[in-house]
Amino acid sequence: MNRPLRRVSIFCIALVLALMGWATWVQAAKAGTYQDDPHNPRVTMAKYAQPMGNILVGGEPVTGSTRTDGNLKYKRTYTDGAMYAPVTGFSSQVYGSNQLESLYGKLLDGSDSRLTKPGDALLRQRPKGGDVATTIDKKVQKAGYDALKGKTGAAVALDPDTGNILGMVSTPSYDPGDFSGSGSSDAKAWQKLSEDPSKPNVNRALRQPLAPGSTFKLVIASAALENGLYPDVDTPTKSPNPYPLPDSSTVLKNESASAPCKNATIRTALQYSCNNVFGKMAVDLGADKVKAQAEKFGFNDKKLDTPVRAAESVYPGGMDKPQTALSGIGQFDDQATPLEMAMVSSAIADDGHLMTPQLVDRLTDGGGNTVEAMDPQKYGDPISERTASQLRSAMQTVVDKGTGTNAQIPGLAEVGAKTGTAQNGVNNNGTPYAWFVSYAKNKAGNKVAVAVMVQQSDAARAEVSGNGLAGPVAKAMMKAALD
View 1 (cartoon, helix red, strand yellow):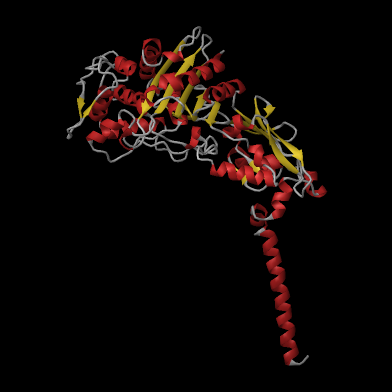
View 2 (cartoon, rainbow, N blue to C red):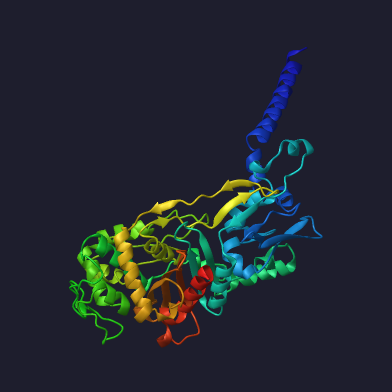
């Protein structure tokens, strides 16, 4: 073979080898990347080629699949979609998925390797999708959803013993089934949802941190008792009324001038929601001690997964004394989600023990066999058993004869609460947020902790209160959980 022809042959062989190497690398190293790429149409076609597994509430599916006429053979359907949207999220042929639908998408569509059986690869078939069993109690979810209708807000109910989320409501809501397909009606529904100024697609229970107002006083009271600032909830505090903010000409007043807030005990201060007591208490403790206590309850945790990631609830650092005083009444830059405030109440209800909130109980394969069980996990012990007992007693006073009377439920062994009305906007020119944080226990010893936030309602500004707007929601959910 002459030299030019030999060079051409070697070059062609090199090209063939390079092509073979590239094809091998793509099949071996890049296959997973291409397979997981949401822009790959084959991925979407495979996902919707068969009915998906379901998300379960109380053992019953709240999702489903229905046949279509397009290339994507099945699309997602939802039962009581708006009520369960904060739990399920959505799965759309065009717009992707979120929340549980996204986190467990591979299990639901059958592509999770844990579902594969030996014969599946040989037959080139995808296993039947698995199911996601949630911790949601249908009665609790419905009670909260019905009670919050017509309001912008959210509510979370926890089982203090396990951390199980029994109810997670966000209103206004949306029906994920309206845009689960790929037709023109789905596109219109998605556009309408995206442009809705009330933002029904925001999960306010997990993703809407707002000023917690006076419900944060439970954290301040916890810090005061844990740090020995006061020995119990019935010892008079050193609290002038009104309280002059340190290094400032501003005084901290109370909602009611006639409330017995001067030098009030923690019990009385919670009963009447005395700003002067908790503002001064925060300053006496110092911002560092308050921050440490708040973080034990879950504040400033950027990775709180339920498994859906919750937004960070914030207790700020770097404050001066006047700012610390305002933070002590749940204002300044304090931010909390309903989930976080439910965690505070849960720890108080469970003798100081705090379990990690969880929304999923177990994952199963297409035959109902458990693939993974989510065992309860302890988050920590933010307060002592004695402090928890003291605070429960004071919270019961709030319900019996204080600002939380709307949570009274005859027949239960205990009901305790703390109300809150948080300022909103520059110079408080916005509608205040109404909060209600509570717990209840029945005679059998079963417990539930609830936090409710009403961001907006039809009530006149002067009528906005935690007891009036949020209290009935908490009562409905507690009653449903413990009946």
